[in-house]
Length: 269
Image (cartoon, rainbow, N blue to C red; front, top):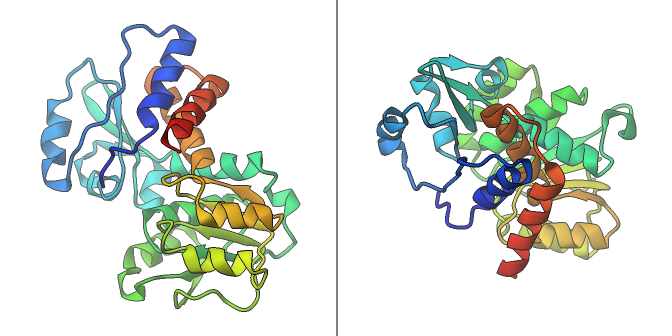
């Protein structure tokens, strides 16, 4: 995946500066699956870790010495930590999703007794969403897949996580769910955004994982319709905070990282 638009360097560098961690640097590196083994081999003792985007989150798994249970369940590690000459795989997307939702008031206590959930997309982030939903007590989910034939990884993850999935065509259902999670590009969620704007489909809680472009048509429409909305920046910030603590051993300075990330986003608009 191209990373030219990544905000991660801004977030992590702001964290280093806020805590006075001189000598720490974070840079974006273009790398495909074929070059991932070489990149990992080139990381010497001065490297604390790596952040990974898709498709590397899955491709890295067989290259790790240790994989935390959550990353193994989800089938994706977005973080590699180098320790004592070994590679440890972690998933901070799941706690990041939970923190992003909680920040917008979406918690197990705020949901109905048996909430309905619709996930748009069936990729790696959808797998992480299943694990986050399990933490909220939700183990039955509807997934709208753009290509159901390519949902094998999601179905396997659901099996490991203990979630029942109902696969549907990529169309908006008549009845809105209690929680809508979009894991697809902004353009793919466009029809859903249009229906929310037209007030023909009104989920009261929305999470859109996209932050480029930002804000997305889906988050704009959902906010204008009065939904509780967590957006891609919220998720990026909180998963980066998890990575920051894993890499540095220090709790992430969220305020400084948020301010830097929002400033970087503002420059793009």
